Image (cartoon, rainbow, N blue to C red; front, side):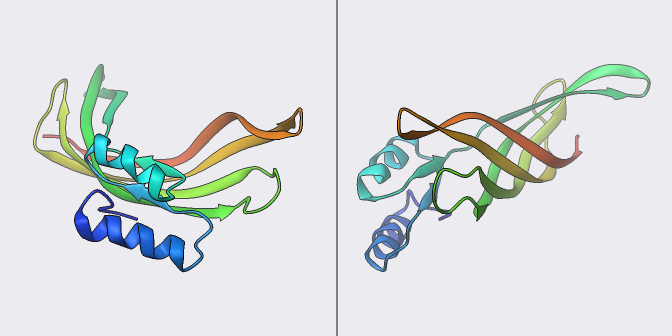
Length: 139
């Protein structure tokens, strides 16, 4: 649920749980309010974050930086039991620049996989992988 840290988003999380949603993932920019959402029934929260991409530009090594500015997460598989869970993750990147923050932008699209197994009767995630693409236009 994007915007889960706002008043309407917090209410939407509660309504989704009351209507029987098995998993509610909250996304927002206020870490304190995201943490409070776990008491309302979210199973995961997503905050903004930083992008650091080591690449080559004009024949030389360089670092492209930016900030995740929003996106969506949708579970694709692994709804029951202890099977691996796959999620579609899509979103936007802002403040993209070469070497430091700039005014560029970008997008990302990927598949996040939580690799799970049972240990002593409990299902645990022992690793995670992400595959996909990141398209950046630095400034």
